[in-house]
Image (cartoon, rainbow, N blue to C red; front, side, top):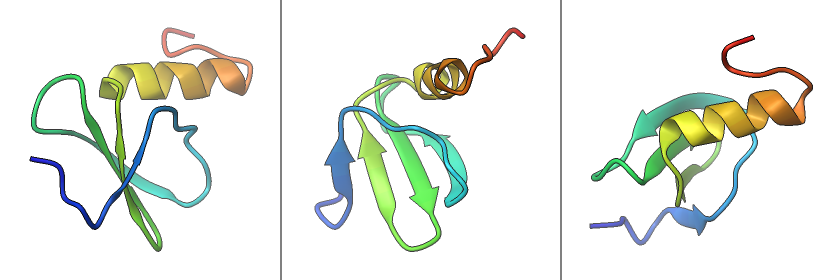
Length: 62
């Protein structure tokens, strides 16, 4: 069940406010904790991490 107090987003980039990236209730959901808000992302945690790495010019494997 998704907490209705959390903002639900499809994409997320890790930034300086990101405190934690946690697996959600199933393997296709990611819970992100930021300094002032919690988010639910409709992607796997590794997809969020890899997308953020690629956006900033790297990759998870690199």
